[in-house]
Length: 119
Image (cartoon, rainbow, N blue to C red; front, side, top):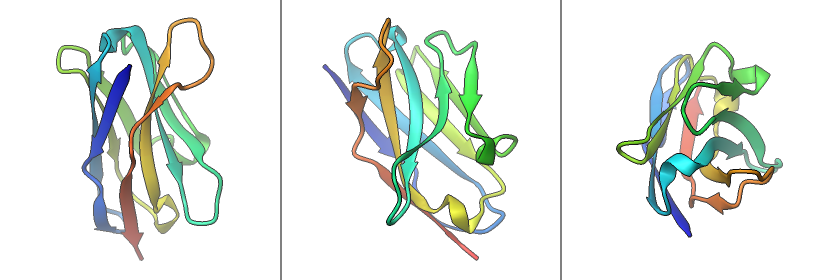
């Protein structure tokens, strides 16, 4: 089992920045690819960013490229999402998730943290 706990959400003005963190406990963190997802009110949950186990490869949804940066610290069992130049449309509950080696689905999810961007 992997337990994930997000932190760092809050209310921020458009153009501002927020850094989300996700702390992992349980099985060896470095064995999992990690991702960030978000769900806005009335919308489906969507992929935001992902990072490979070693941290050497990252991917982003087009709408956040150049504004968001995902990173991980395997020594501290954490994954972070630095969000800059925030827009009101970035308002959502943000979730971190873990995907095991050899799988295509994210199996473990945190409880989510709210990010609200005011215009």
